[in-house]
Image (cartoon, rainbow, N blue to C red; front, top):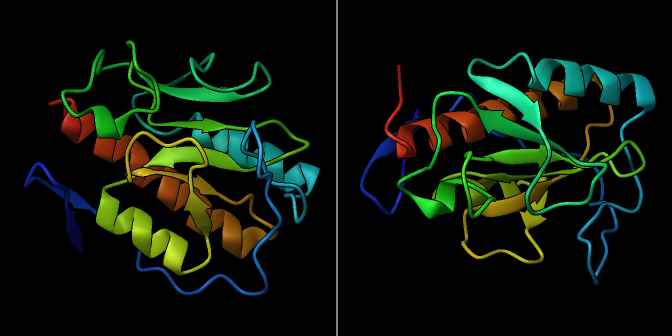
Length: 170
């Protein structure tokens, strides 16, 4: 399955989304944009962090746009995206996503606008509270193993979106 971005390019979608079960978690209405309840259990959060930084071409770094406790997914093969809607950061390197701290467990990431809307409509996230583009969303922390699979797939899609937008898609 593919989605089309405003640039006209298409990007692969890892998996179709089923609706997230239950009510959405509460999130902050003032900065910083964070998840207030239904956080991932610590062991599951640790697995998410471990797997996120095993994604191809991802290195861990400090986010340019989030709190110090956040862990940025930075691309080792894309310095600056030619599509600003594919990175949360304004300056290089490309930052397609960052994971918030263990007391929050949500993450901000970029996806093509159509896919970002699908994610939010299915209850997996919400528009970023301080977004510059409709590609920026918050994805809620996973509550169990099945949700971990979905969240990791969305992180992978975000990395792919940034790599394709940056001209690297090897």
